Every structure is written in C-alpha cells, then in structure tokens.
Picture 1: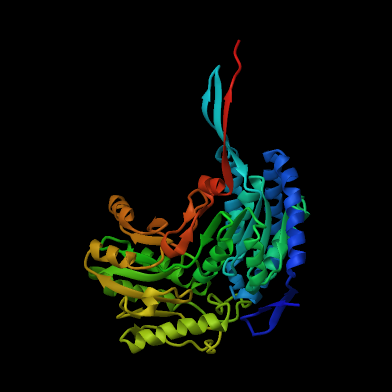
Picture 2: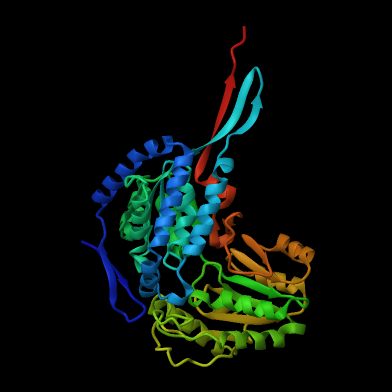
Length: 459
C-alpha cells in the first residue's frame, strides 16, 4: 500500500494523506469513466456547457474553505483570495466560444456535395495537474474537455492532494455525472503504466521537464496525443522609453507573487543601460514592501515555498551567483527559517554563466542585467532552453511586435506580465513543451478532426 502525503510548508506537519490506487483498481476506474463518455458526448452541447458552469459556481461556493486549504497545502497567503477569479474568467470564456470553436467547417454545401470537417472528442482525457496553481491549471483543460464531450480523469500533485478531489466533488454536486469526471490518487509508476497501456485518449501534463519526459516515455509507441507545459525562465526587457514605475511594480509582482512559483513568473530581467540604475532602485524598493510569514496571517504578502527542497534549490542558486560575483540587494528576513520560508532576493552583476540566469528557479529571486540595444536584449532573452512568455516594456507597439517576431517564446507581452488570457492560446516552445490550452486552439487540441465527403444521388 502506497500512501501519498501532503507535507505542509506552514509547519512541516502532514496536512493530508490518501492511499494511492493499485494498478488494477485504477484500471477499473478508467474503464468505468470511458464507458460513460459516449453518453456524455451524446448530450446537447448546451447541457454540457450549463453543467460545467454550474460546477464552476459550486466550486466558487467552496472558496472560503479552499483558500486556507491552499495555504496549508502549498503556502499561498490567504490575503490573495485563492484562484476562483481566474477559474471563473476562463470557464466563462470557453463556455461562450464553445459553439463557434467546435462548429463544423463547411467546405461545400451544393446540390451535389456536402463536404465538411467536424470536431469530435478524443474520448477519455487525463489531466495531470501541478501544485502551484492547482485549480487554474486544471480548469484550463477540464472545462473545455468536458464541454467538447470528453470524459476526464484528474490526478493532482501530492503537494495539493485535496484539490482534484474537491474539484470533482464540486462538479458532481452540480450535476456532472460522477462517471464522467473522476479524481484519482496515483503514484508515478501506476500513472506511467496506465499511459503505456493506452488507457487514455489524450494526456495533459503541467509540471517539470523531467515529469514531461516521463510522460513522453510512457506514451512512446501508443500514439496518444499529449499536451505538455513544462519549465520556464521567462524574461522581461525594459527599454529606454518604458514607464519605469509601472515596469518595476509589474515585473516584481511577476517575479515574487506566489513566492515566485508561477509557470510564467519573471525570472530574469534586461534593462536598457540608460534606465538600469533607476530600475534596480525601484525594483528593490518594491520588493522591500513584501512581508514574509505564515500564509494564514492576513498581513502576510509572501508565504513559504511549497517545500524546503524547493527553497533550498533557490538558496543554492543565490549562493552560487554571489560566489561568482553577483550582488544581493535584499537582507535575510526574520521569518526566513532556513527551511520553506525564504527571503526574496534581487541580484545584479549576474551573467548567463550563472545558474540563476540559466536554469529555472521557481522561487522569489530575479537577476537583472543591463543591455545596450534591442539586439543584445533579444540575444539574451533567446539564450534559454525554455520558451513560455516574454514581457516587453516600451511605449512603441510596433517595436514590441517586431521584437516579438524574433523571440523564441509562446506568448509576447507588452507592458504586462504573468497573465493568462483565456482568448489566446497558452503554449510554449523548446523545452517548455508543446500543445496549447484555451481559446479556439485549446478546443481543437482536445478534439480530433473528422472529414465528411457526402455525394448526393441525383436522377
């Protein structure tokens, strides 16, 4: 028997534990969900949309319980109010566009032929969701997958063990059939074995690069389509004509919010040399406002990292950078216990020879470098094995768009950062992964095209 345990970063206690399903029990559950999928897909889309919206509202009604639960499981301060605002925005948007996104594409409707391409659900979708935004990342796939007529099995990260269970309970209580949307507790080996057995028709995974590689290895030879959102090292670039105050506030929020544990968090910043000193001063002043402490305290603005292991990895990056000549601009805070509670840090004097500017940090640290031109900034921004988002700060839209065309990234922001627009495709390139969620393309990735070439019989 394998027990999955969520160890709280708040105090190191075991906050929750669940027994992982053995393979035979997991396989039986998957068969049951698969058997229910065709009945679900046969229901009118309007009914599926209404039930998904009802499930979202039921989840919202649980928010007063979810917010402190998240604080205990992964350390996000209760003052931030949880994730329901984003969950609502994304669910409502995909619900509004579903009929159009999934409408048949008609090629010909003449007296002789009807030719069209329709979208059909893959069947059974597995969502492997991460701990850093356990509801937001899950809903990106869950909502459009169910609306499109798929059945869904969700497996959550152990660090947020209760999130999948609660999400499914909300949707089932709102009327989604319990055999159409199911939560599972699985260890890694059983998950990989199910994927290798082609138990699923589509797998969506959000997590580490190594986790993505494990998913790809398990799916090898099965031809199961995959959606993978993996690591990131997202850059910001502040040009000489930028609104410096807005850039400092937004980029520091993008670097430090959720203790830096954001898929599209800002991890490295390049600033035109003419504005460099002023930007660093403004950035340091902004981060000094943060209060590190117990996430259950309403005054806390920066909680612990999800685990000591993650915090120690960031500490090593900072220490290695400083040993190589980087300058740290912020002191160690009193609440920094050497464990999961980690002081935020801004580093200058950094180079791309340092891990903190090259490898994913996923914590409250950011390095800032001066540049002399757009070409230099572009070269440095592209000098990464990752590609999720890039944040450009300028008053010139054409300049940002021209740079964007040369950036190796999934999303180009101008004068904003760390935001997922549900109308656009959320996607990455290089080792950040493949596929795309939300928007019309998200629906297309959760369905398959089926062509109809119908010749009419004429006398």
